[in-house]
Amino acid sequence: MKIFFEKIGTTPKPIAIEKEGIKLEGTLQKSGYRKILLETRLSGMVNLDCDRCGKNYNHIIDGPLKLTLSDAVSEDKVDLDIIEFLDGTIDISYILEGEINAIRESYHYCDDCDGSDESMEVEF
Picture 1: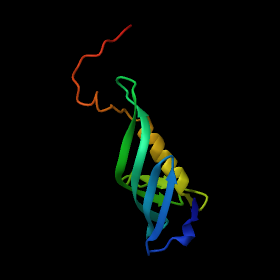
Picture 2: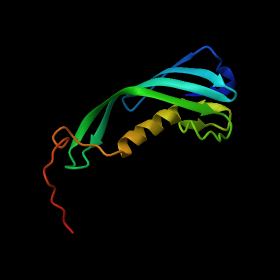
Picture 3: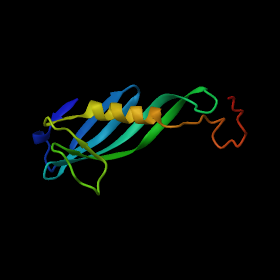
């Protein structure tokens, strides 16, 4: 789903997209010169592998996602949650794919391993 920067105004524009069981729903709104505020909610379920025992399990995702989008190179040192789309279009699918990949690449523990202080055997 691609949206042109020039189509986004000061009135919030609703967006909704789903990929791999994860929904991204929220709004896009112009927040300044060459900047757009993306305020959404990520929800759904993603399949993960436990980084401790290797067990495959489903993880529920439900949380806010707030980003600033820009159509120019940003040198803002205060707001580090900026995604630059230099071709004049916002690719919502790209944002959702990036968030799904970031979740999968983090460390995760299944319910059995979460909070466990049992020693793990390490082989060299």
